[in-house]
Image (cartoon, rainbow, N blue to C red):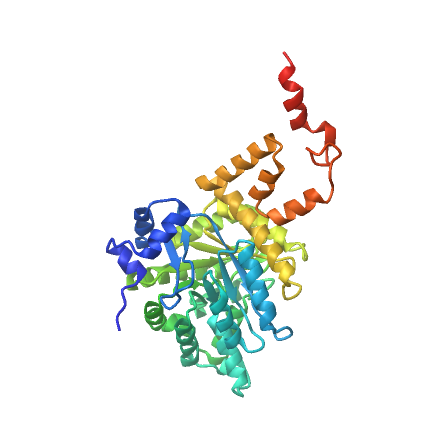
Length: 433
């Protein structure tokens, strides 16, 4: 059956219910949403088989969105815990989640997440393909076949996955550039390493690149948004913006055009670990090489020396990245580089990344962003604590901290008490002539 995709409808000037809903959520016109989808600068994540999912618009003129990664490992695989992470992530304000499970009953976990999630769900299908290959008695992931990879993507599309990370730009040419230049930390993407290892062992091209049209056909059938993965992203500051990373980005730009011509919506994934002075140039490169396609970045992490605090290093990079055009931030938790995130880590990561996204939105001129800050300023001027708490990005934490230490005068916080600058001006400054 031939389906008319969201992109094709937009190119024909048709405004769909999903476009109307995104426009309402963002406070802009449906015509702008339709126009930017047609140009490939906005995507709407919503599989045609999902009916209880709020569509997320990602791209130009829209608020910067936040993704939370959840999922099991070989050491920790508990469906109940992952569903709790999903609940906490959505309550904390995540716009999407990705199930990155590689341990336990990963298909059952994914289906449970899809059933419970009210926000778009993404996956990295090659994880399941690799795990299935081993569970079928094969000696190594290098024995998986191209058919295995596409069968997994088809299966996940049928289940209702809204967007998939597919590392189509890891080509033999890109790997040669990395090998010729040399890297301190080689390939750090898990999915990227699966494909790089497979390519080297089998002496073949990446199936996701070689048979890209097959991927597009699956995407059309299920209205899958393709998140073209950065399998060669730098895993440390020393490797940032090297030849392999840029070669992959050039290839992703070419594949973006092919996908858009086919009627498939595309996002581009980006690094990774980048020194702060290279963040802007990386964003500008993506926008230039990929025809303005929405840019989805992990962090970026701006220094390598803060394990335990990488929600902060990534929020610094994320705020800057969002301010210069990044559209979608993947959260980083305090557990990054150290362990599988806990439920509390998930909450902390979402809040930190939402702060970064909001700071970027103020810089980009998103009206609703500065309006929220103006409301907070007025509530502070009025010493309206309830208004301040309810306007905060994390009201629960704001309330807990305020109520944990009560001032003697009952109107200020315990930082300044009777010497609160705002209170002094309100009570005495107005009488000064």
